[in-house]
Length: 237
Image 1: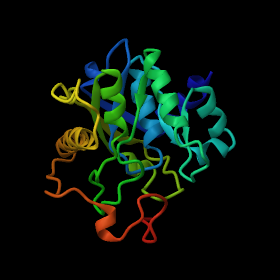
Image 2: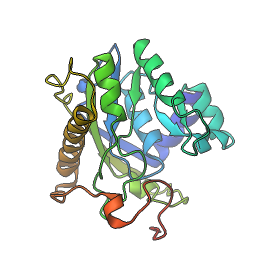
Image 3: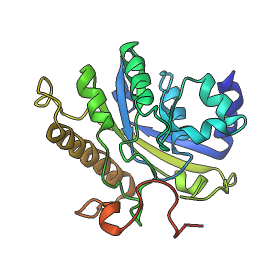
Image 4: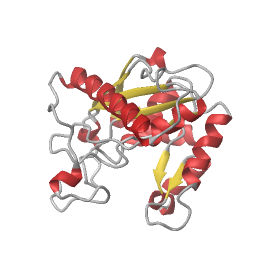
């Protein structure tokens, strides 16, 4: 039902150029970690995974579940709300993600946690949730990158560009090598090491898509006196 409503519209506004789709397992659980710079990223990435034959699940901001139609679609398609306001249910998203993995589902986890703060939209410093999920359950962690969603919905903008039809490139990488970290106690040091590998893999995929080289140092919002969540004061139009 949802596919019948959403996919035809997406086909009108965008064309996907998918590379490395064979790296998404046909069956079994996995964690997928893409880059993030537009609010439409989850929709586009879910579409790509759906085209590859898997039902996408991802962690989404709880506020999106309150939006008419969008919230209905998110709930019906099994997406997981993440409440950043500290409502006392901070472990609920993790528990839901764990449950999906245990039931052989794939979960999309954005390691940056929000839209990148990097001025040129390169991946910024990552969070450790994706790596923790992969290590605790012994499942593959697949990096991904896309480029072109900013043409459909610019960062921090609410104005969707429908015409002309946009081309969005998506690249799925080989599973991140975490073999030496598996079986170890899951300490902060292990999580940070694994997350650094994930962010490096995502960045390398994005460099290939953009034909550019990313900055040597990954953007750290704290070092630039920025909040890690919410909209920046300087918005792109």
